[in-house]
Length: 525
Image (cartoon, rainbow, N blue to C red; front, side, top):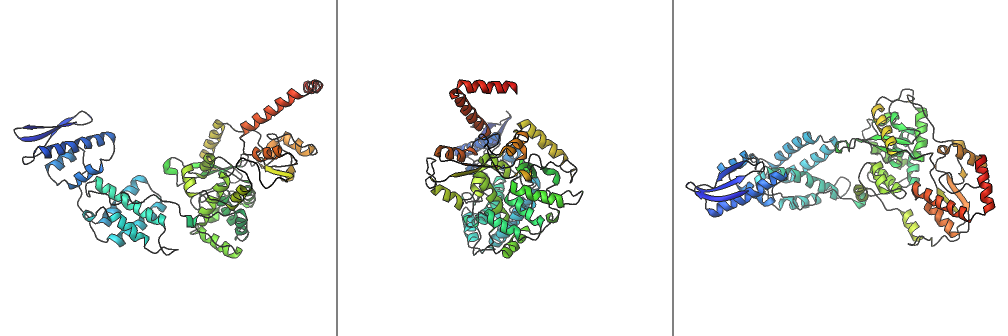
């Protein structure tokens, strides 16, 4: 609240702060009614912004910037409605001081400081020794245009993402300067600052290419490094440096990954499923590791440039290198998972949001395009009518753990991860290699195929010993073919409901004599 009145000393503005404290500001002996009304209007907005904990309106901030040093300015600073005005200084000096303070408060990572240093270099080359007070509203757009004309490291010009990041860093410093009253406008307001995707560097790395790279690699440890990036989506090098054997849950086939990048956002770690392609390499690395070894990749914990290893392997394998090798493999892993599992789950495994995944990670693939050309929108296959064999993957598990059990396991892993080393915990192999092969649908699928009693007995005794079994049956029924294609995409609860409904219909139409025989057999058991 602020009201204007006049007494023997001239125009005065009476106000009340959000905490109820009252005060008076004088418009000055030479100020008239219009000047006092202007101060009262700005004062109302400043009080409201302070009560809401928000920055003042740009017009009010500009008014504060134009306000000369004097009693009015000092009074607003005393009331906490304006920041103490700092002395005008060079743009680059202000930028370096602001980033140093902001970095200490936010505890930013070295990689972020590297991006900031690049922005400071750009600002020094463009602005030179110019002062903050010389900035105008057009300088932000002019700085962006200048950056776009600069030569890049691997192309003729700087990438759009690099330009946006540098503009974003300078925009942070300019907003702080405007809030402090040093400048009256933000030159980067309206200038694109959010990092966007770069289609020229988006590459999908298929499995065949990855296997050629792994075969051309120098060691088993290199192949495991590539697999962790391509088949588990780990960030390289930040998330593989501290990866320990104690983080591997062999029975649940999960990997606890500490994430330095998301730690300050309240997400210090996440659980990642271990795919069959990765599990085989992990088993071999575990068997070859010396007793007492703590880290999964001890040879690459301090490697200066892991990407160079990929480039050399590409040369040996005769594969054309692609930009950002590890990021591209991480994005390809998410693309594969997103085609089979809900995006919310996949984003949690990768350690970011679904919005970030859709903007920076998901890639279109030729295989998906080819499938779309052979599949009608209604769901019926258009080009595979004569297909006789249906092959689909079904993951079998003994039981789904509850949320509380998963949380308990996670907390236990968090408390003991640093202390666990190789063979300090019992190892349970989740794969029975001699049992691999073609078999019927297991417990959560359709009824098993008669004619493979040994595998059926194994499944009934230990269903968790089977990993990604293959369902193979011959049929001429298009409905059964369509059901087999959709089965692996159904959640476990819906699978159970479909099976219960089918059994109920079967019992309803089952002859009475057969039902009596089945009931007698059940009682005998």
